[in-house]
Image (cartoon, rainbow, N blue to C red; front, side):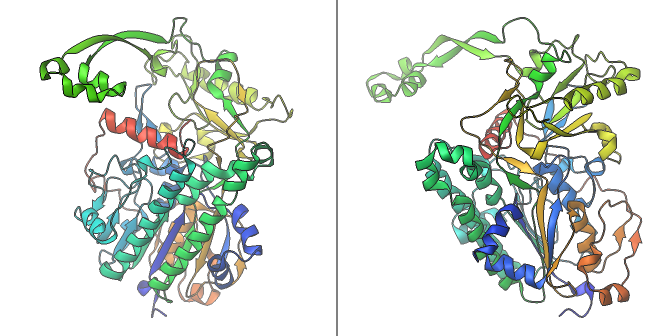
Length: 558
């Protein structure tokens, strides 16, 4: 046992999307012995995610102990100031100190695949960035040579961009890739702990639990499984099998970390089946808040293609062997049709409010004069309009069940505080049981859609939290905690003062009273955030397209 809290070591294991809705039935069947051991020997309970329960703000709130209004990450994309465009969220979107920034500089840190940690930071230790890593050619480790070192030791380190891209057309191949991807994280963690350790704080995130749930929760839904009997027979157990695999990985990493290490197991949100899609922009259009231009969304242009490229496209590449080089290089003009980007389909001079145009979170922005480029809503009427939209949304009912769809509609100031609140969407929505997925679709009139293939499944607010180690109570079922509570709890247990502006609270009911008496929680005024810790990162259009494609494959974009 460590002599004092400053000698305490932490192993944090993130299971993206993990939920007690899956874990508890498996515990009853004796299928998760490591989970059971952690719960018997530590404290555990549900963990409330951020509003909205989306990967970037949730992991950012874990890392900082703060609500999104204080760290600046509200979703997969950030709204560009003075524009209708968005930009991809990265580690630079988080403009608050992360938990490891508060550690003594002598503390050794190891970090693997935590979302929103690209580009990598220069830390005292090792770091493998999590999403959004644009490609394997990017520098996404610290030190930079760690990537090739990992490859030399474990053979490969796959990033998530191509993962699950064939989950519908070839689910077996996607499943193989997912297990390979997951195993690489475990092997990388073992390698770093064995060769670079000991670490004072080591964290690895396994995202396979979330990815498999997005693809396979439909097999646990009676309505879908009853009409897809043979498919369900084959794939019904894949979520449970992934949790069993993770149970074994947990056991190996916990043993490797040592018995005196404090272990935290957590998820950023939960998950559950998708029932319907709610086309929010179509609803906005129907209610007169959003107006489209009357012209066709399609355009025609001319593109030049080389004869060699055309032969490749029609699978006649063998003919190139019979053609001289000058003919193969000849370019032929061909007509090409394309759809205008969503921002060019909207009549902004008549639009008062709009939902996301790119990704599928339930958020709404007011077309505010002086803030949006073509804003028409006077600031004096903004609150009235928000109230009007919320009032109407709360009355929306599912046409089949007759039940209200929107469980909560929040104005940003009601749930966020801090210097970045003004960057947040104006209205944020949660559906009943989070069973409805919002889309960004503008075209069409249908408001609700019951998908034949209900993937990707949805996130839920209820994640998991387990903690075991010296001075932690044993076998205690905790009341629901907030994801922002973890950072101050770790800081406190490692002998640090807690920054005053953290929204999270030390989880005192998990900690033995004797420890709390000997070392009461102390607080410190936070230093100004160092904005120069990492270099700025610019994505090319091609990289953004590929990242967006990866997010769609993984179930994060509609």
